[in-house]
Image (cartoon, rainbow, N blue to C red; front, top):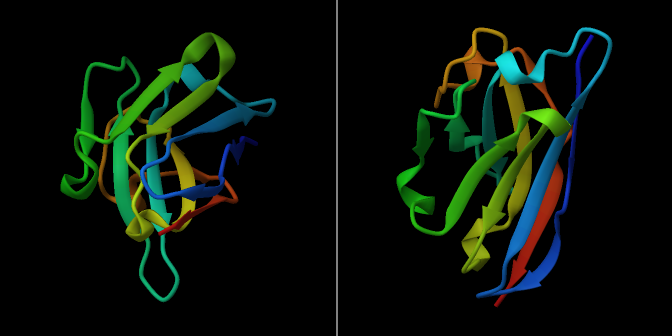
Length: 126
């Protein structure tokens, strides 16, 4: 099985930055072949797409709401996915989840993903 563990969340003031990490582990993990994504869920709202990268890193897509402020990246040797978040706004407050798909594609659709982490809380104060 494959486990995804997010970290790096916290409480930050508006305008601040955070770097979220998502480490993959497990006997069956093949991180370098996975397509990866970040999603978030704010209180009282549905989970929404944030960013995604394919297995080679050559295809990256961002939600319009985060373009220019969020950067997704991957370090395959460390089995780790990152999300650099700059210029944080109160509306970025949410639980952030990483996800992996075995087919290796970048996808905005959460149904495309096979594995999910438990999430890390990001809270932005105004």
